[in-house]
Image (cartoon, rainbow, N blue to C red; front, side, top):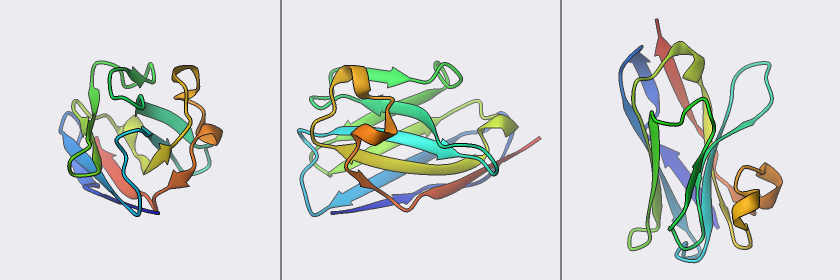
Amino acid sequence: VQLQACGGGLVQAGGSLRLSCAVSGRGISNDAMGWFRQAPGLEREFVAAVSRRGGYTYYAHSVKGRFTISKDNAKNTVHLQMDSLTPEDTAFYYCATGTRVISSELSHSTAYDYWGQGTQVTVSS
């Protein structure tokens, strides 16, 4: 199973980016998908997730209202639309997929089975 994330880059504060994560090697229609991020010197933190059936989304408080996660089962891809970006959003962003993640565990990195290599997001002030 491989996860390939893309869409990161350098953007000014207030701008937008759309991250995508393509999964190969297994279908994601019954998987929960999540995005996590890690800034230099800090621990990896939860950003957003979508439940296995896609009917429930969950966001970190810091991004709620600005970020939107969506899952495209037909394309085996998950997206993260990021709007109103701030310098505090600067980090390496990772996508992950989990086969047995329940709703109460969507923010737990240990609940996910497979991880992508990440993509860098840098927001300038």
